[in-house]
Length: 226
Image (cartoon, rainbow, N blue to C red):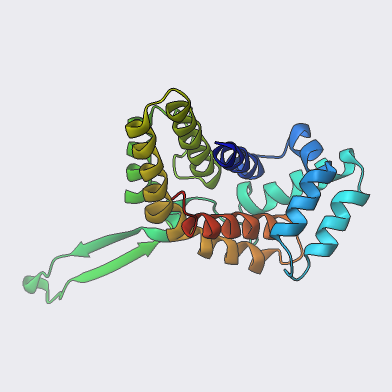
């Protein structure tokens, strides 16, 4: 049970990293020595991790909050050269537009593929998963990284409840849904997303945050609980 609690807490922390512009509670968590030690463990041997963790320790909470807000907005909210959409469908779904041939005007037809679009099939599939589990997203785009990580925390919480109340079958079904969502959604696009963030802002905090998410998901894939 303790391991399940820790998983729920970890997914909750990762959700907070990508839920929106960082608030003071997230900054305070990043300033916590125990959290910094855990980040150092998870990011061991990652180039640049030491410098980023030193920044967390040295900067004041106010300075850190301002810096992270600017970086988050530049990467994930504001349009521009550094923008990296944190949404599954952008990396997985294409829109195919086909125009039929028109022999009467000697037109052979065409087929165009548009990539990098929001609200694709992946978005619809994720929204369906949320509806099944009663996970509300308050009008946000369902397939954002923050919401998908929050959904995993939600599923961990439901599994925990079922195990605590002795409903083993429901708990196992919930564990299966976690594994399925991890395989069919998060692991299908987070590796590409993490690479994009590192390309755009290699020395930034969110390059390490994205890598942290990826490493944790990879550890989950191989975990016995899944």
